[in-house]
Length: 349
Ligand code: TLP
Image 1: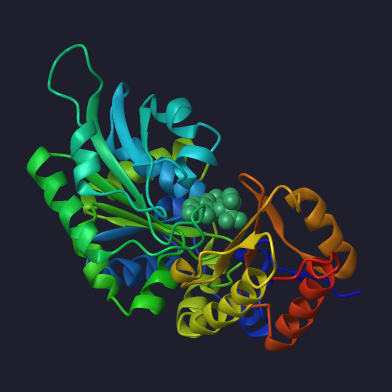
Image 2: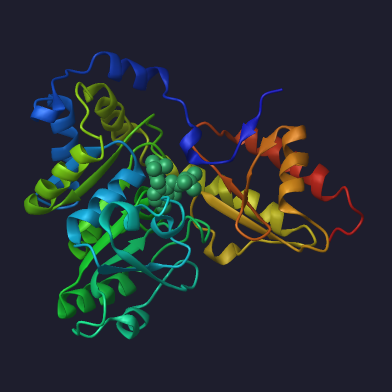
């Protein structure tokens, strides 16, 4: 049985054309800055976001952690959203690697406001950690691929300027936000000191993320990348996959979004299952389940037995993610299977 894998957009396999681009890539020693394909990818991304420089890193986690370390000193405080990836899913890396303290704020659909941030800023006083960095996430994974309104980003940027704070964007899925909103990447670039984007999620490359910022920021980041063991050598074979993905897999993300919405609507039609349709605008669907009827772990098992993979996520919810390897035909089959599992109990809405 062919499984329909909706666990994450990280599961995609490189296409034959992408593999061909990898095989034929020109390479060099990237620790010496001599890999022409990596350099091409970095220059291209810096230009796309209107920044001076960029750095290829092994993963989204490495991108965020290198950025946090580059912006802070031990003892500083980093403000982020409560359900954010850098706070929950990076192994406590900010404390371990940068010696900073995270200050999570509860957001609405992953969005925190300038007002909320302003309220937690620390006075300049020896008793307090120093507020140094704000991290935003767009799209927001834990909230269901939600979009961070650009107006709020502008307000937070202004606050950061007024208070002398840095601002980093975890843009693992910024591509999805860009395609869904049509907001130019240059506009995002204007409002952040650094941005981390992933090539290995919606874009479908096998490995890699890129951090983007000023020449000075990238200079610091380069050192931390090396310390974290992320100095890779003839890595142009991976950068070539990223370049191929930017050329061929960016615009098609709208298809993932349409497919995800079909799943969302179907799930929302079952009793005891809730999907926030209004905020489901990209490729992630989070279905929250009424515990009286459903237990997410058990439902995931039942779906798996019928050929659909989804991930139990947070409190009694399941996450479904569409991606490059999911076709309309997969969606048709998946919707049928959802019906079989969720209509199996006699209380359809
Ligand atoms: N997220 C993974 C899991 O870790 C949850 C996924 O399957 O979605 N930022 C965001 C917003 C992410 O969603 C992820 C990956 C990362 C950073 C980290 O990227 P990697 O996995 O490349 O370290």
